[in-house]
Length: 226
Image (cartoon, rainbow, N blue to C red; front, side):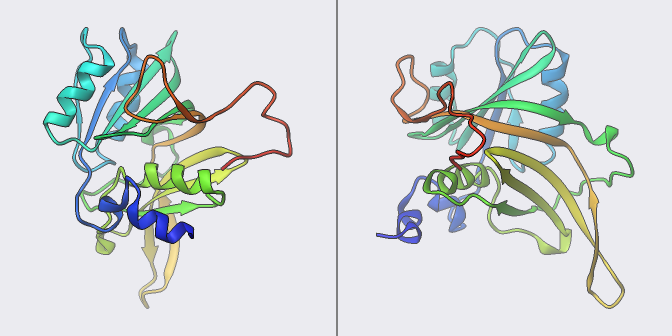
């Protein structure tokens, strides 16, 4: 059976078919530093229906239960180490999967030269170069953080571009000439880069079962997985 058929039935189909709009709970690891808050402040306006919750002392399983009861579709957990961003954990609800990424190269909008201002329109989502079966799955999982009924008048686009297993994240607005042809892209920001460490079945387990895990020595120059 082909990938297209599989996608009709996967965990993200209801978002891509426009049946549901995602609703995203964003929180931090315990004891976050300022960089986590800066990153979350950049994400919130960019992901419609995303809400920040303070982590407090809850463990992840309690957060998962809470989010399911309130019909969230996804949880994002941002972690830093000594004020450097290190990890983004993405839990898809209600039944998984869970992806854990290394998070690097965060540039907030204010640090991008001539950046534009975001509007409230739902952006178009562009998934670039997710070519393997695993890549398709990861691209769809990330893409399902946004509603799939883009408002093209808003001319905004989120691009997730996979290159050698690094997923580059960019947010732009199209600018048009008077005759209606596309003229230029104005970057809105933020920017950041993800690299998947593992993909787990279910909603974050102490003893996870992995769909895929990056092992030491897998980073050879010629082998890529997405």
